[in-house]
Length: 252
Image (cartoon, rainbow, N blue to C red; front, top):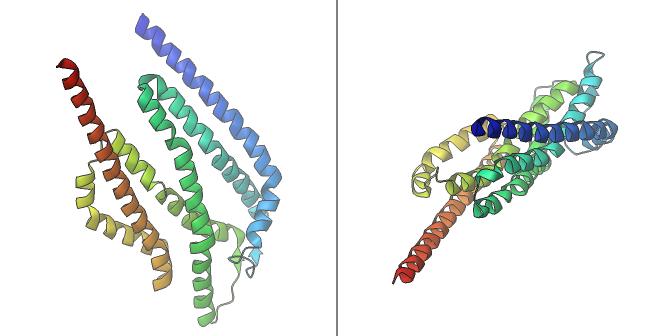
């Protein structure tokens, strides 16, 4: 009976937190709908789009882009709240030390994602657009871009890199919970490099500069993640040694 009551309490707690997230999602969606024209104009005035005419090939293209923009704004600003409520939901099952340590993952993961999005949009994406434009010009093609194709291409570049910037936080979390061994992680370096080269080449134009602009940051993120994993592993070993020493001294 107690287990059933506890299970019902957990479901009630989960439902309450989901309601908070959904309400905040719709509030930010309304804000996104209001600000979408300004956001789209800001994107249109950036170097990657200022010389490109956005065309619509159906009556609904403009509306769909407008709604997608509002939806993405809502997702972006709902993400940190959702991460916090996930942490708050599992907090009762954590020790006080674990709860304090894992809370820092919420703002860190959100900030790293924003950093990745900004880096990819202001650094990587313009170089890709420039390369594509030069290729089209070299073969005498007339550039006529549909607005939906432009944004699909932009999102396919920006979001994978934004997610890739989460690597240090993910690695630290896996090391913290004991699912990742930094020594074994280091031994997988050559395979990780190969994977990052493949990923970098698949989301960047085939020119050398664009390829490096994607692959090099991914490799640096991997090395940073490796350093963080070793640092935390050594910190935990020192903490465990100190605790054991104190227990031995206390018994003596």
